[in-house]
Image 1: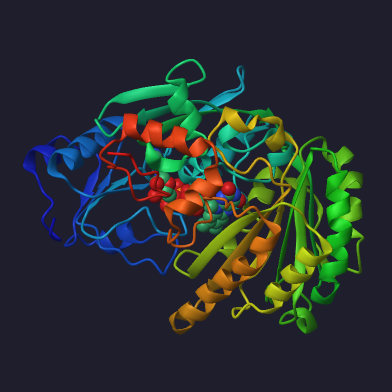
Image 2: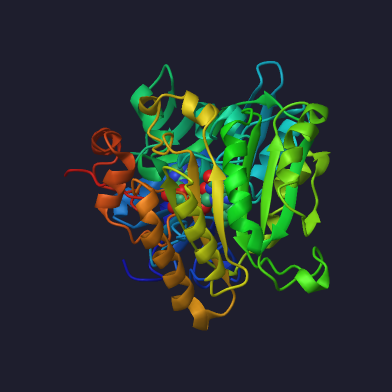
Length: 463
Ligand code: FAD
């Protein structure tokens, strides 16, 4: 399909949202995604107003053999929410949320962000586990798993799904839950956008906040190895209410740090206590006392505020390349290598991250969902964040070299929501999904045998 050629009067007339073409003044805004390195020029962007528009768009794409990209929050690092020449089925205008405080559930449209959902649920002192940056889309994040500040107490985002409404490649509208289309429900919890376009998610909610005890403490970079050793002992014995992550880099923020520290290496421990704030403060205190901090912003604050603390660090349009690896241990040697790679980052904005896993994530059986990372005690995230396009190669290479080295502490499986540019091969997906891979292929054969939904961590159908 050549550029600028997607058009069909019947489709246009039946579509309630906005249809944006390359000559439209809004085109450049509508095709931009969070990662500034991505520069795709779709033939048509269909900003859907509801499930009916999603069905029309899928039917149109299938009947005309048009390449399809699906956009939720537009925050996938690989930029799979857009494509060259094809059709972007964009759900970002579909942000409605309905909370039922009685049943502690929320039904949310698939274009919403975590900020949209937190805002509505916190009105009732409720929340479901999301991500740690609030303008990320709920759709991509939940379908790939979802690792956030409440994970050790309440599990992954996908663990909290009650049901999912979805449009299949055939344009059929289905609901998947524990009682209906159970196999599809299994695959949607970790298998990504392979099986159709989700129009709505139903989440279970938990009492959280409105205030929570939090930890955000920054230490000098030269204390990283010693603090990580103490940290890994702490988290091994911590209650499930505590979920933390460590990020190490230069983190040059003039507003946060004393001037002598702005351009020095440092690292942070960040986390919160998913329980009463007065109970949480003393529980989190040891994390703040591993060494003399450079700065300590810990304390009790509104959950919504904590959910948004990192938002400004990841502006739209900067250049990003993120990958990951599940670690099977945080041994002294692994810690030494983490410290080395944090020092080696070409960009001062980049970080090496260690996410604590376990707790409620491990309580869900490995076969209960397609999500592949339940076995690991830690996730290593390697984030290249930079501004200058001339340094693209150096930044991408740093991430790849770091992961090549760190693979010695891992079974090689990765968190599919930190996917680089999706350059990985089928072998990596097989390694990551393990025995679940064949079951995912069978689902793909059933729901999308023509691979209409292929701009993702693609499970290839056998046909
Ligand atoms: P999009 O780019 O819109 O979509 C990504 C892909 O998801 C699409 O290509 C499609 O395959 C699929 N998809 C999207 N919408 C639908 C739909 N309605 N139906 C079917 N498939 C769909 N992950 C975590 O687990 N925890 C974090 O704390 C976290 N923090 C992050 C912070 C930032 C700043 C960023 C950029 C990412 C973060 N991530 C985190 C990773 C995040 O989970 C992925 O980037 C995810 O893909 C974002 O979802 P999205 O809807 O915004 O993305």
